[in-house]
Length: 263
Ligand SMILES: Nc1ncnc2c1ncn2[C@@H]1O[C@H](COP(=O)(O)OP(=O)(O)OP(=O)(O)O)[C@@H](O)[C@H]1O
Image (cartoon, rainbow, N blue to C red; front, side, top):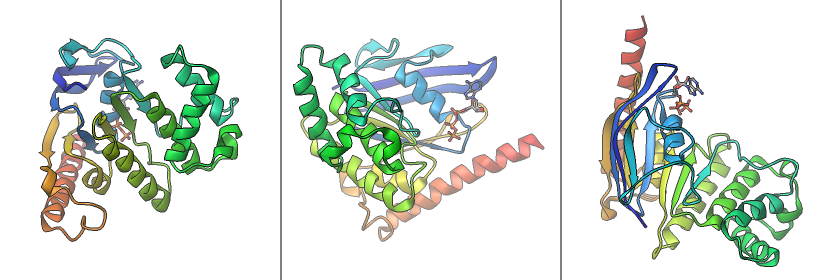
């Protein structure tokens, strides 16, 4: 369990600056939501966190160690489910587990996969089904199942529920919150990209709002434990409503400023 420190990260694509001077402090066990308008660089930042790209300058520390490349310590869930279509769901999960739990037998890995399939609300029979035989929600549950079964201390989630209908989305939000909360001793640090303010308010212990062109952090909010609203109280709690309006205002202002700049 390690804190994460992001120091002065700069990143550009083909000399086009995307991220400018990103600084963050994240405590181990935080549920962090990264908010911001479309195209501002949230996914780019998550790719840096995953070690899939390198910053032009600056350093990300996990504990005392500068982050270098991809690692099984950081699991990733993307919006597009990222399951190989030619393998059954079970084989997809076991294949990933084999990389981490090298000494475990296939039987034990299957047992582990089935345990987590149940945890994410999927039937055992899902194990033998191909991804195209599952609904979008079931595929995303499978991808989340794989990530939790791998048990990384840090989980990076890039708009994992963006493609789902509202009801499935709400169910999966509750499921991830539940999985994160229950693991009290060893709570994962989650970095979750979304452009949905309500989703961020429901899930996060900490919110970073990314501005655009090039992206800087334009607002940060940390919740104290007692402030945290749940789904039932979210829209009844005045402070949460005030924060919601503030976040929407900050993001809209950022969009308007970008439109004015582009004129
Ligand atoms: N591989 C790439 N090559 C060049 N430019 C890229 C590449 N990937 C992303 N970009 C650009 O970088 C900027 C940031 O993109 P990014 O996907 O990180 O934004 P985002 O905030 O995650 O957006 P969204 O919420 O729409 O997913 C955008 O202008 C995008 O067009």
